Image (cartoon, rainbow, N blue to C red; front, side):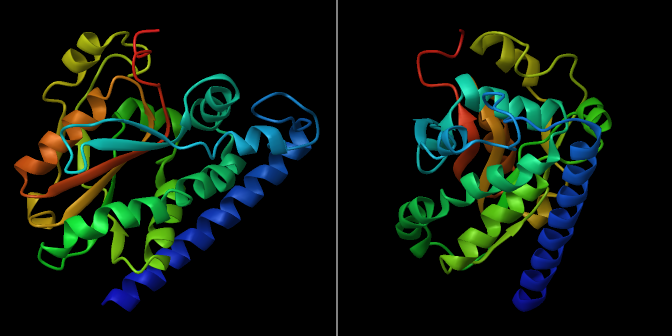
Length: 251
């Protein structure tokens, strides 16, 4: 069963790679390519901007067993522009470098969670995406985190961990984007009771890693942890492509 799951994950990863390559070719034909971070011509990401995606940042996340969330980089400057180009402007070729950045967190994560899981029953680690609203899914036309999740799962498997993607969480309708609902209190109010588990029977006893694109105040990952814990899962840690450094959440 595990071999079947691994093979299925590799096939999905290959399919996303093909789709991303085709999307990149079409974009190249329609418009000249420029670095998504700084605008330098003739490249998807220049070396300087790409390197900024590999500057890990820890932020507090007390709802998780590790007590911390790990992001690939601080959410500012070129990193902010890269993620918004990928997330809100459908720059799908960025799936590749962003997936590599997320995969780069796997060795550190593996070292941290291994002692925690030794005393737990041997169950697969579920890599769960933070849910998007139905409106966001319609606007993007895809689950934008999916290729990022697959890159992370493959990296965790290379570390010897039994991991798989599990889209366990759903979000009821909300009126504003999380990055538009300014302030910790407003974001918490916006998401309170909105995030739920689709099928609790799939989660009981499993350690879970929650993956989001951006952590601002931490409200989304906190609500995810509460829903997962209520379903009998163990929220171990949260991960993100970028996070607002502590103390700058309301800027």
